Structure formats: C-alpha cells, structure tokens
Image (cartoon, rainbow, N blue to C red; front, side, top):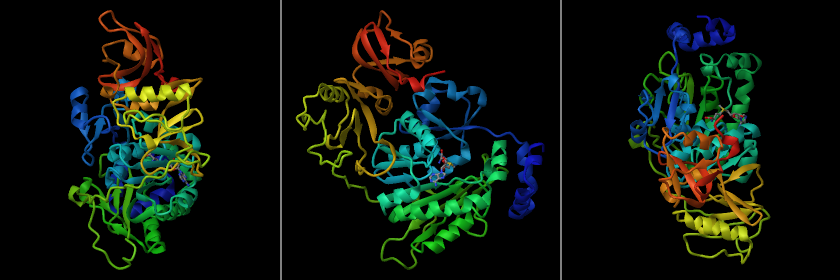
Length: 497
Ligand SMILES: C[S@@+](CC[C@H](N)C(=O)[O-])C[C@H]1O[C@@H](n2cnc3c(N)ncnc32)[C@H](O)[C@@H]1O
C-alpha cells in the first residue's frame, strides 16, 4: 500500500466514484507485480518463428497475436535481436490501440501523437510495406526517437513529422483512411508503474489535458476521409479526458459516429462509463496498466442519417477499404517537376533520367541494382545530398517540418554513394548479394554492434565492397570489405553501449 499513499486525494475520490465496489481491488493492484511486454515486429518475422528462434519464457498477451509478457531477467533490450528490430518493448495494455484500429495494407494512416513510436511501429507492420504511414509528434526531440524506432523496425513507407495538428490539417484535409490519436494525457493509468506520473499529475491534471485533447481530436477529424476511421486512446481514467471528449466530438462533428468496441476482445475490459461502446482497461481487471479506447468512423458524404454501425473487435468485422492508388507527381523541395528532379532507377532497367553525370548518382544506381528489389523509378527522390524512396501517395515539397520523407536510401557525398542504416534495416537479408550472417555465439556480432572492424574467418570468402551484416538472417547494418577485413559502417548513434 506504500505507493497508494502518494496518490492525490482528488484522484482517489474520482476513482472511488468511477469504480464503486471495485475501488478496493484497484487499490490492491498497486501491490501486485506487473510484467513487461514485447511485441514481435511482423514486418520481420511471425510470432511463431520468433518463439522458435528465441526460446525465452514468453507468455502471450491475450488481446494481440504478436504481444508477449517476458521475464525481466531476459533483458531483451541487451540482445542482438533487439538491434535487428525483431521486437518493440511495450507495456501490454498499450498494445491495444494499434490492434483495434483496422489498418489494411495500402491505407494512408496518420499517427498524430506518435513518439516514441510504440503504436506507429505496429501500424507500419499492419501496412506490410504498402500505403503510407505519417507519424507526427509536436516535440521535435521525441520525434527523433520516433524516427529511430521506425527505422529500427525496418518501416520504409513512412514520413516523420513534427508539427502541431492544425498545420497537418491545412496540408492534408480529408486525406487519411485511418487515424490514431494516442493523446497526451494525465497518465493516471500509469501511476502503478511510474511514480513520476503522479508528480506530473499534480502539475497538469485532467483539467489541463482535456481541452488540448479536444483540439487535437477536432483537427484529426478534419484530416479523416469520409468512411475513414479514427481511434482515440489515452492511458488515463479521468472521464473528462475519455468519454467526455468522445461525447464532445460526436456533438461537435455530427459526421462522426462511434463504432462500438467489443469488450470481449480484451479479457477483463469494461465498457465506457456513461458512454457505451468505448473500452476501458483497469489494472485490477486486465494483466496490464490503465487505458481507454474509442473507435469512431466518419460517415460517407451524403449519409447524414443512421448507418448500420457494426461493433469492432472480432476479426470478421474488419472490412478492408478500397486500395489507395493515388500517386502524387514527383516534385523536389523547390517545387520542380519530375523532369527536373533527380531520379534514377535500378531493377526497372531505366537510366538516370536527368542526364546528370554525377558519379554519386551513378553509384546510387549501381547500388540499387545490387538490391533484389523492384524499385519504382518515380518514387526515387534526391534532395541535396540525400536519396529517398518515397512512399505511395506522399508528395515532396509540403510545407511541414519533416524529419523524414520515406526511406532514406543513403547519402551522395563527394561523388560517392553511402547506403543508410535505414536501408539496411528495411532490406531482407536475401535482398542483398553479399551477406555476413552471424549468430550470438559469434563474438563478432557484438563487436560489429560496438562499431569495431570485423575480420573474416579463413573459411569465409573475401569481400570487396558493400556487405550486409546480419544476425540470424536479419540485417543489422552495413560494412565495407577490402578482402578479409570489413570496415564497420554501423550507424554510430545506434551503437551497443
Ligand atoms: C501518450 S504519448 C504518445 C505515445 C505514442 N503513441 C507511443 O505509443 O509511443 C503523447 C505524445 O503526444 C505528444 N503531443 C503533445 N501535444 C501534442 C500535440 N498538440 N500534437 C501532437 N502531439 C502532441 C507528446 O509529445 C507525446 O509524445
């Protein structure tokens, strides 16, 4: 009971009112141990293959197919598999929002409050490399962490932005098929795990967050296509931040309707309090922390009246939206047309189209030819010294603070092309001709991750040029061979410490 003594009286009074007879059970949950979770990155491998390769003591999180509780002594963050982007460490209840938003490959998806990327990495996995994921966070420093996590996960069809949602809405009106608003909140659902959240609550509680959340929600609705879906989530219990905001939105935006979430989809979940169809997770009822979720749909234009709103939460309810075909004409940041822009192609067989003789671009073209990937010429975009592979449907030159537009292929520097860390992570081992595949028994795997030069063994073939270094068949990064020695090209900012 030690921790509960720290809880603010106003919070306890509100919880007593919300929970009634269950209040004492909720308080008892503070004495119970919580288990950390990891979510397998299905962009890289299936949960079944993961369990085969890693015989760790894992227990499934019942509400996701790829979430597991693990024993803290396994230390999954200190394992080469983590550096290969095979999983994301995530609190189990926090796995629900991305699981409940019915994203389909090809969708245009926006994660409005995305850093550090717990939900965005799963949304990217659900897109399976198709369509577009725009991940935004108003905090630039947090957006940098978000970018790292998306790149580590091998997500290529992304844009990472740091903007206030109103600015996004001005650029992308009614553009997205699916939107996640995992809003900044007073964090009451995390009190059990993180005492600092209690301190923050005393400074900024539900009264502070509720108007901010309303504003983010309104701007997000403006970016949703008719027929599109928006999932609102918080990790707090306050009705002001949860059901009251959903009710506000339904009133303020009559084009929105609630799609009831099936509480049965999460064992122990409760219905919304005073607004049926939402979902609440409490730590005394589920094996995870506190969370709130509500799924909404924007009615199709001309459908002002009642629609048959089917509950969501069972697989057969997920109806796939039509695939997105739109592809913006390629422009560079100065607004030039594709003809003037610097494009090149690899597998498609075409030549660099802007007649440039620049050596770096020729190297880029040659490098891309070495990748067993069907690159689409019109999606390759060069800005200053960087080459990018743009996601479907993303126009360059938009007036937003981007941290990344698509997959960074690499840098064109002093007439040379250097492939990026992100490209290594986005490739599959079999997509690059020269591979050094290591296992945990090989001391070179840690030496590589620490940035050291790698020597090849006598039984290994010498390497000339670029080589993909992998752990158990999953890329870790690049090295450059000069015979039996490999110069380490692992991104210094990601090194094993
Ligand atoms: C609950 S956290 C998001 C966690 C994230 N979805 C994840 O799963 O890793 C809320 C985030 O909202 C961001 N934020 C706060 N105000 C915002 C605003 N007005 N627009 C966009 N993001 C905002 C914060 O910087 C914070 O990173």
